[in-house]
Image (cartoon, rainbow, N blue to C red; front, side, top):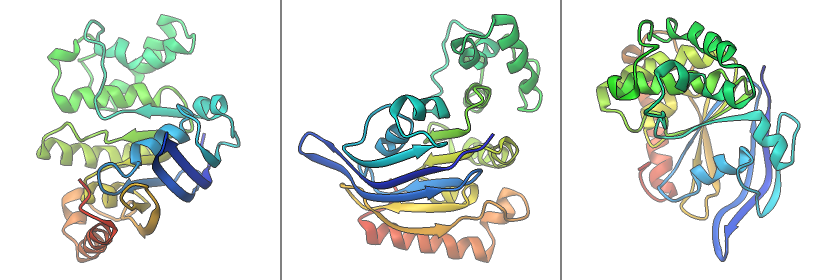
Length: 255
């Protein structure tokens, strides 16, 4: 199940503080769009507005044909930077939590989530508590929880930022086919330039606050080869330099 996401004339303020200004954005069904820009430019705010967690000050947002807050919320699954696993739940029960919140029985929810563990490299860890899992494994459990919700739009807010560089690179290579197989429309915030280009169809660059959409570049989502091969290619290096130039021009590095 996929859906389009669009924003037209989007402005948002917190009192007198302008967070976003004049955002016009269209995300095709099944597309992965990464959002990059300086800290404080409104990247996470944009995710909150799209996901119906807050109402925009001005303009229109549409998710899967729904414009109201409740409709947008129903169409989106949110994955924050931290995994937010409940420490008293097993990995399996944490993964099934979204289904339990939708009213599914515990047996059904656990069976649905359990079917994903082998594919996600977690077979045998269903009964483990979060403190018994590595950081990368915890993030995989969080991804299962996000995906089993069945929402057509995934909002990923720095989903790999808490990981060390080696684990993060491994999870990027793992995540690329997962997103492709899900068929979901994805809006992803990241401060990592390589991550943005490697995982996304397009990368949108926001200016410093108030965040304005200043440019978009093509990502390398469909590039052939493993991650190391892709990110060391001349084409990827060209895109990396282009994105870094846009970020510097927009007002600072993506951090």
